[in-house]
Amino acid sequence: MNVEFINPFLSSMLNVMSTMAQMELSPEKPKLKDGDFAKGDVSGLIGMVSDQAKGSLSITFEAPLAIATMKKMVGEGPDEVDEEIIDLVGEITNMVTGGAKRILSEKGFEFDMATPMVVSGKDHTINHKAEGPVVIIPLKSEFGRAYIEFSFD
Image: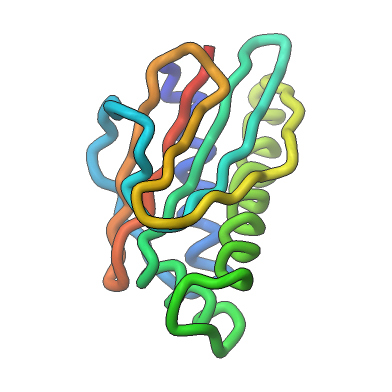
């Protein structure tokens, strides 16, 4: 998988979390993911297509991080994953993908995005739209972890 394609999503995620929620996330080592089960509790999944590639991106939050993100962004929030948290994860997925799309466009990569779909619950699955391998990057914070997954043909 092309690092030139992954880095804009990673930097966009770090930027969104830093500017919108005043949270610093530390990327850990990327690896190939086995299986379809999500590593966290709430996942935003968005499909992307271009002349060069077809694929999808997911952003998964562990519940404590998703809840802390809501509280930092809005000033208040629930104590467990609810519809507001699910909407928030969808919106963050949209912002991250939009930021990455802008960066990639400057490098000559153009693609269209679908509307994000959000899945939640313990042991939920993420079904990427591409045939390629799934790369997962854990992101560590004081409130828990988030995970970015990519799969592109």
